[in-house]
Image (cartoon, rainbow, N blue to C red; front, side, top):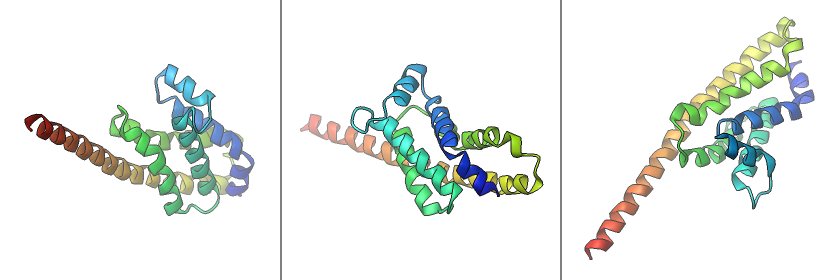
Length: 159
């Protein structure tokens, strides 16, 4: 029952969630990211939009963690090199719950739908925890790369 409702509201959920993700950036950046969806002139906006769409599609259909992780990695790679705290970097996942709740507001009186929705929200919470782990691994990699660059610069200066 919930799956049919989510499928019917799929494009609206994707659009609103993508907007909420872009809203985590400064207003000028957010505006740019949301306007131009070209892969070459706006690779960050394109990547976030495409990954968000795939995540929603997976949540509605299979809930395949492997497929979702791939999409999360795409978004989190971007956020790992930006100036986000860990909670800000992965908080976009929690925003999906609010988007879905708003979209389904008229249907929340049905106990069966509400029960399925709570299961879905639990799954989204699990995704947030997985995203946090992924983000921290990516952040560690970024720090390691920066450290190696500093080391290499120091060595070349000495020589």
